[in-house]
Amino acid sequence: MRFVRYNVFTLALLLAMPFVSGAAELRHVNVAIFQKVDANFEFEAIVLGKFSSFITAMQGSQVLLLSHTRNSVDGDVINIQQDVLRDSSEGLNDIGINCSLSFRDHSTADNTDFELGGLCKILDSLNANVTAIIPMASLPDTEQGIDAWVELYEDKDSGIAFYANVSSGD
Image (tube, rainbow, N blue to C red):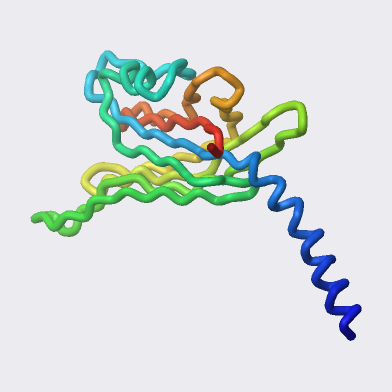
């Protein structure tokens, strides 16, 4: 009986080892959502530079939401919600953004390969709600030496754009 317990324990330890060794490969998924405040401002498909340069490049828009996950792994579903509920003469107003995004890690020993996509609701009960279907898109990995943010989606009517990248788990 003692032999069986040790073998079960050893087997459980061996099965857990890949998860421990994979911990060095953890990444953070970064999502930023902006809205135009200058009608002449144009969102770029890719913005190069560290975070401060990225924010500077977004002059002409305002930050609606910043999200930084902790230790994302393949298959994670990232839920982001930011709403303001307000009582008004028209009733209860709901203004905000609700997202459910799927993170995929297709990396190999030689190459990193990350994707993000899903569904976001741009809520504005005073105007029109928008359902943003964000197809899976490749995300830049800042660990590879190029700091970049990629535009995932832009809703021209509301002037809202979604950007993302992946950063090191350190």
